[in-house]
Length: 208
Image (cartoon, rainbow, N blue to C red; front, top):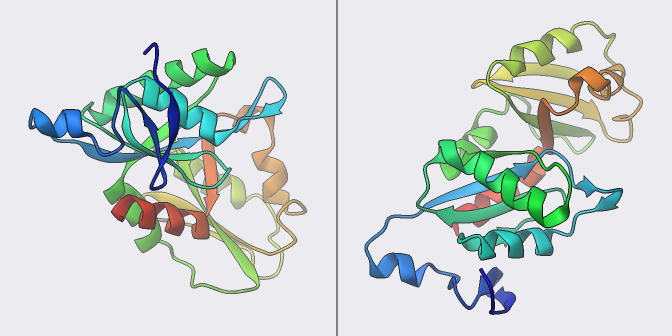
């Protein structure tokens, strides 16, 4: 969309053509669904993607209620488009904006809430818990890869609610044998992971 300026209003990225709270949609009685785009990576062309710039690109593409959450590649938005078509649409928008291949997953607020509810691990100040957003069926493959390593003390993995969860001691993530598996070339692009604390923040924003 040409013209107009992007800015922030009550935490939302806004554009003159697309009001933050979807007034133009509500005027015509169009139902909007809240989604979150989880980017597989935030480095493009050797530089870290700025979430504010990514959010502005989504606003200009016609989405509303756009809210980036943290710098790890989580962007909440509202749209009347079906979930199945949003992934390719957003990947094209962001790839065009940043001049590099951008891949992501799109989840509804219900699916994000389920990531929290399905976690098999209790909160522990000494451990990180990660949930993996991945292609359908990949969770079993991730568990099989984890079973190949000798886990460190307290390190564990489990598939719950159709999702793969990994727990490891704080400060030991990069030293884990599983972390090295995740870095293999054949594993890249199949998933993205988030700390369960990040998911909690995203879920709270989506419910606000």
